[in-house]
Length: 110
Image (spheres, rainbow, N blue to C red):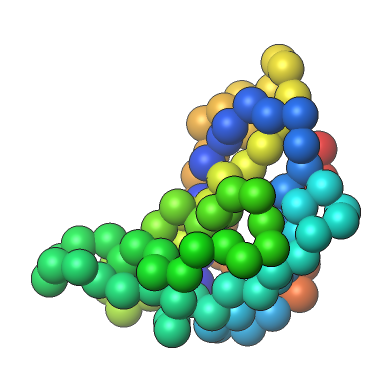
C-alpha cells in the first residue's frame, strides 16, 4: 500500500496511522480521532475511476482522505497533509511512499 501526502497550507495538524491494509486512524489537532475503513467506507462510482468516500466524517471537521485507488493491484491512498508557511520542497512536491504500518504520517512530523 502507498500513501500520497497532498499538501494544503493550514494552521491545524492532521496525522495518520495505518494500522493494517484496510484501516487508518486519523487524528486532528491531537483532540479528535476517527477510524476509516479503506475498503468498506469507499466505493468506485464507475469502472476504472478512483474510489471515493461514502462515509462522511462523524468526528473530524474535515474529510481527510481524498481518494483510494488501485494500481497494479496495489492500494494507493491520497490524504491531506497540513503544513505551515514556507514548507520544504519535499512537502510541496510529494512522492508516493510505501506505508509502514503503525507509523505516524506525515513522517517525520513537521
